[in-house]
Image (cartoon, rainbow, N blue to C red; front, side, top):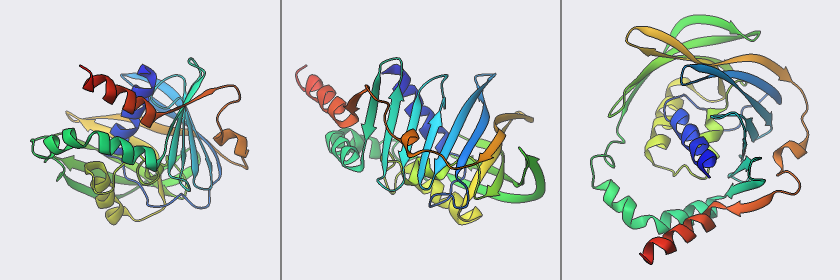
Length: 251
């Protein structure tokens, strides 16, 4: 489970500051290969898109797959090492929220729970780049709060890393939550249907590439790529949460 937890954390962390768009990106079906900074070392992940379905292979770690379906608002995490796939739906997310109710109430009254009013600044620099053969507009952004972020994102219409799917189609994201509110601020600033081709962070005056598209392949992809592999065991995240909840009650 450790790999699943790490990948989920990576999704939420990246979505917390990169700009999204509201619906599925239009005008692009195919495969995009990205390079990604992983603790100072460059790794690779692949995004496959078909309609409102997005598949991420190797995102956040060297193995494993995340599939998000914007039509059903469900998320699947496939772990080859365990021959399992973990499923989360909106119904599962609501059940988990009910189980975690008391803890969430305590967080609302804590400093961490009230830290959702981060101020987002994002503006078009007027500069352009060509990334993987596609022209994109460079935006500079910063988020000021309990955790400050600053950097640039090169945005293109209808193609690029699909952060919006990780937020608006992700059952783990609760409407009105901290990350959701940040995404709404970004969306109001940049508009809809924008993907990220390159993202850099600025720290101590130094700019470091965190993610960059290296290959863009528009093409028709098979529906089978968005289904669980044959022979894998299905695990519902809500069932795992219920088991953990019951175990805590017995202590």
